[in-house]
Amino acid sequence: MKISELETSLGTGSYASRDITLVKGSGATVWDDSGKQYIDCTAGIGVANIGHCHPELVDAIHTQAGTIMAVANAFANDVRVRCMEKLISISPSGLDRVFLCNSGTESMEAAIKFARQSTGRKSVVSTMRGFHGRSLGALSATHRKEYQDPFAPLVPGFVAVPFNRAEAMEKAVDTDTAAVILELIQGEGGVRPADAEYVSAVERICHDSGALLVIDEIQTGFCRTGKMFACEYFDLKPDILCLAKAMAGGVPMGAILVNHKIQTVTGTHGSTFGGNPLASAACLAAIDIMEKESLAQRAAELGDALVSRLKEQNLPLIREIRYKGLMIGIELRQKVTPVLRELQQNGILALPAGQTVLRLLPPLVISHQQLDSVLDGVISVLGAQG
Ligand SMILES: Cc1ncc(COP(=O)(O)O)c(C=O)c1O
Image (cartoon, rainbow, N blue to C red; front, side, top):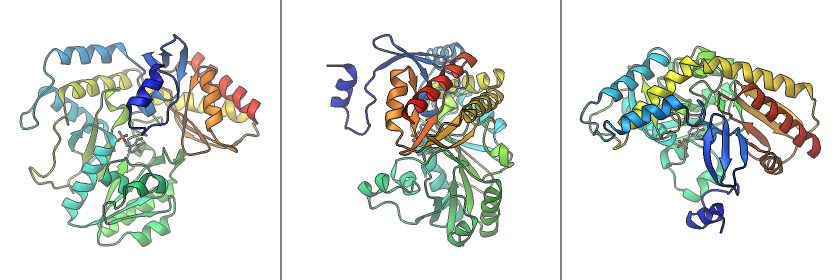
């Protein structure tokens, strides 16, 4: 039995299989168990922004693994503190405290709980096509029938409104709204950027009603879109910022950063592994690499270059290209699955975002040559299928 088949038989069947077994990675390259090489435009779904196995990250993990890895949150830890200070220093102003956890969905849970606790309000407004995670609270804010229906009843008090429509948000938010949850570019929902006027309207609506503005940068954060955080494009100062994915270079980690409006009560929320020194050391190393290698700027430049060259092709199969930095969504006039399969056969791994969007989330260290190969590969597959 192939390893990919064995994994399918051992798993709960929660994941669709791509039928290959990845065993090694370096930079933007990954290898399968037969030695075949791929350019990885998935980056573990937006995780490996600094590339696979960056030597400085590997060193930092190695050193911390030999120092201390398990420290209960009742005790302070030097590396955890430096990680918290660093996160605060790179985040939008006003966010001056941190809660550390282990994944995106956990950061959303913390955001929802802290918002309810701080405001004494119950309702939470999110947007259609938004994706915020799979645990019950985060899932309640992830308005998609296929994800929600099998697990009903969900957490009460959640409503979803159409994305990019300020009037709908205005109507939904009232004096019982604890939080409005928003992605600045919807990732899983098809790579759909929020309009600047919409974002400033949402900010004003939250301000006027006393609802807290929770910005989900789990996918857009850490240089992916051409800035450390997409908030910088909008000069946005959220009340709560949710982070995960790329923040520790591949070591599981999540975080929320909060402003003065968030008041928590000691003992009401926590996480055994949150702020684990190993993850904290990895996070410090990953951010250091992002800064030293100017990965935000690199993402912006490479994204512009790839998209402008792809647009020049005028491929009939492409309906629209939406992107910011190296978060790229290519909306097709057909289902994306056969395109993904063909690209994979040709040595390029890419992602879907819904049924018809081809999503590219390569490591931001991808070389110019690799990016050219991705472009050639996409043009040839879309040209042949069109
Ligand atoms: C915007 C956004 N929020 C939340 C999540 C959930 O993160 P995790 O899978 O780490 O729980 C994701 C994951 O894809 C995401 O893209």
